Length: 165
Image 1 (tube, helix red, strand yellow):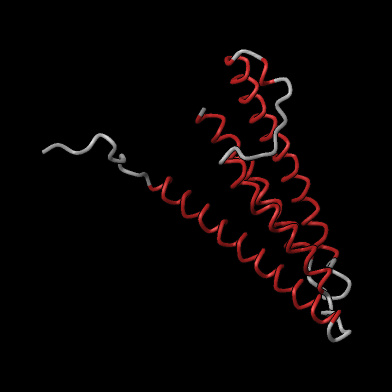
Image 2: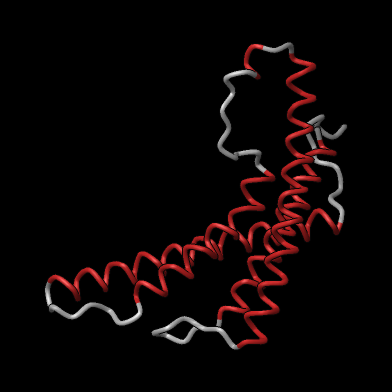
């Protein structure tokens, strides 16, 4: 008996690692959102019920929100779910539309590479100066470093999509 036609080809180690990385990013982004919701909930209850807001909730929410956005960047890029406006592209021939999509992926990768580079410099400077948030004293250098790495992963994801099309 022959195998079915829709059987998946053997998956490469790179494919498994990429899938595990993306799955980890999904879990991390979900946990960050969950923590952000819990912090906001405790802060609101503390503020309006006990007249005592959660100390540092605003700072923690800021940092978490930044990390959620950057953690989602490679995921959104790989799934091609960026916000788009197709006022012009919906009216052009398909071959031009495909060319514009490829061009957009190259531009996206270039912008994310520049962002990763600049965030890396900022992370280095923040770490060297020992900058931290005012109330909670959360170090900002590692946060910017994580954001830089996630921008680089987003750029790589954009290039993967470019070559996949």
